[in-house]
Image 1 (cartoon, rainbow, N blue to C red):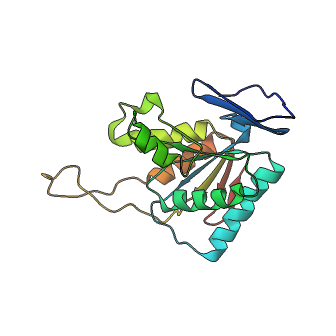
Image 2 (cartoon, one colour):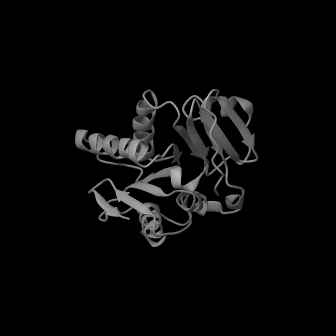
Length: 207
């Protein structure tokens, strides 16, 4: 998804076109969902949060904003890394107000005004990819693929040694099994897309 860039120097203009948005802020041109200006965050539900991790993440995001022109950040949910990424981006938004935070939902295809208003306290926009509506349990995997496909940069928190908790397919099953890591799948998928991928957990770059 890509929108043509135009420049307006004297006024703020924001117009909704289907799921696409164009924003202009006094000479700072911003194209929502333009791939080369977009970064997404994907990581394990539980992370080891340290001061170094926060500093590395802050430095990385700041570099994307200042030197790469990134101004759109896509977030999922149910992950401590999503929460941390949102926290850092929100702090940087105080200095760079043109950047936008987009929440890509993996559930609730249709939301009421109250829930949307609640989400917009933390994000500038939210949407639900229509093609994942019948994905069932794989909706979160499909949502991650959606974010990767629409990003030029992906910041991961990926631990190769991590294994999700063992579970059962149903309550009737007598034995459990080891499910696959959704973050691992997304990480390998992103590397295969030949986009800029950073594993912030151990600072591995794939460009």
